[in-house]
Length: 496
Image (cartoon, rainbow, N blue to C red; front, side, top):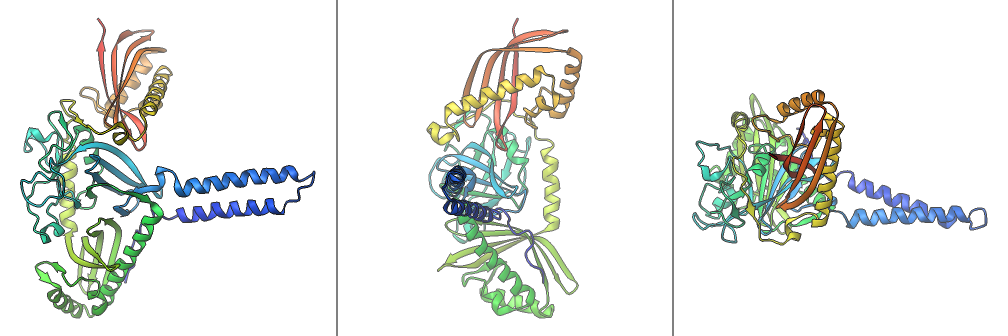
């Protein structure tokens, strides 16, 4: 038998950190209480009291405040460095999340467009975007892909196992780009992104394993609450794995719901099928579960993981998904799917090869939101203006100092300059920095405009060096990557 490997660590450390903070606070308060308030120790007591309140404030802030301790309620467990995608139909936003350094972080939040009609998809042509848990199963590129779908499309596995059980039909639900400006809630059922946002997303997801959750409205909850739910699901998963590995048919079949259906078999047929396999392997099997992903919705849960099975001389490696229903506080499996590792690796190789041919968009097309500024922006407008100005001033300073390492750090790795990619452009800039000598940059008449989750900065730029002078209008388009601003595009129009 082999226990679950790679159990979620996203919530570990939070509880211990809280206990540490509270312990320190309690000790400080005890010290104040026990300190004599005589002339020689009165000042010491006041200092201890001051730090006690500081620690107490940190405890309160840590427990109740701060977006960093809130996470989408649908993401219960992710392995380290794994990503998840959450689509909020109510606000028309897509979130790309990453489990990094013990915490679930919002890597990118972008505007999106979903179906014209509200509600869950039921049939083909109803112009609704489905609600549920899905996975990407491929990559479509031009010329095979029509121009109206933008730079690429990521087909989803709709209808999934749950959709088919509820007889929801239709197909062709993709995440794709655009070839013209459009408004939110304007699609036939797909999730549509601006082309540059789609390119960023495509480079971060993994076929078959990155969960894509489409929700009517995303609810953010404290990570401590989500951890409790995750632990319960992980205990269920271990009980299922252990029953299978030990050949305990009674405990194994108890993990399945009466309405279970998979591979064309109901629960009774599944029982007989598994019983024969248990006998074949003499009730001794090795079942290994690696890097479980646990996703939750109001209707059902999904556990996705890499599975390694050994029974006698037979070995199977692949990815499994367990679909769970909740009833009376208990979870039971109502369906499961299996994808052999050979299929995943073959299609993943093709997917990565396709990403190399992903071309930058020709037009700067936008999805226009009618939502309020408060709903579409993570920060108030004045903060965005301030951040953008500080960012550009620091960018200018690094340019004047000819600090190529710092200067290039202001740019996205997806930045392109003409026919040059980021690495080629960086080599080109290194050469010009060395050749031109001391540089003087003057920026005038700066105007900053918010465009969805991006910022466009336009200004008049004067460039002087010992060998070259230039002036004209420059536009920088800034985008958030891993919580920091990066230059995604820049345009230069020389003055005559």
